[in-house]
Image 1 (spheres, rainbow over the protein chains, first blue to last red):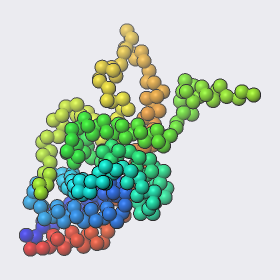
Image 2 (cartoon, each protein chain N blue to C red; image 1 turned 90 degrees about the horizontal axis):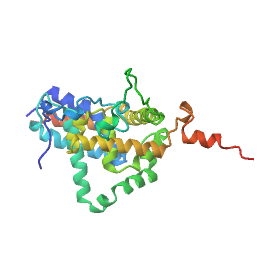
Image 3 (cartoon, rainbow over the protein chains, first blue to last red; image 1 turned 90 degrees about the vertical axis):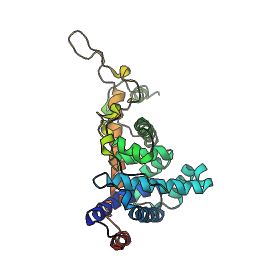
Image 4 (cartoon, each protein chain N blue to C red; image 1 turned 120 degrees about the horizontal axis):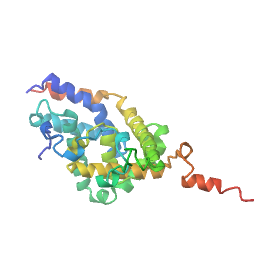
Length: 183
Length: 98
């Protein structure tokens, strides 16, 4: 059965974002590309289960995430230390993950629990609605919302993003500064 | 293996609590996990808010915006690479199979 060109184009136009998501899961471009290929093989051989007119990106992201998770289930050691391994991958092969200017952010992102990182990326970078992100991750919308919130709070701490100067004198940091200059 | 998919778009928004949400991070209040009653604005007899937004809340929005920007910049760096040739070849090959 030949694939409808419209469907094929929908698949192709999802690939760039699918790769970005895969890299964020794997922390390694080569492994991410393998995962994307595996996802496309799986998707195109089960294309009948895709309902035309529904959300192609959400469908492909779901398949990719399921493949990634089942691969982890198979390698139990990795499940137990998924986050530690992820961070380690970034540390030892920074050149495999992309440009240097994102290094600080990427390192902070790597310190998040996998489920929080995934939720933050789906909503904040891939641009999925909370409902679609919940569908992709197989969890409740409220769960995605709280994962995104926790991810953001933790990232803000890790990156020490500080806009204190823009705000009032009641900020603790301002008080510390004002109390300085003890001679 | 069962593949999840075929999202029923009719389901979207069934969960009423999320209906008003936008998808970008900047639009989400940092304290949105709290019950709505905590966020209810207290107003005086003239209808003016008694409690102006706290600096922490404004700082939160600022920080969220920066995190959102960095996250998208990092992600788009990969998206802008487009479709690698070996992947577009694979898709075309698979879609032409009989």
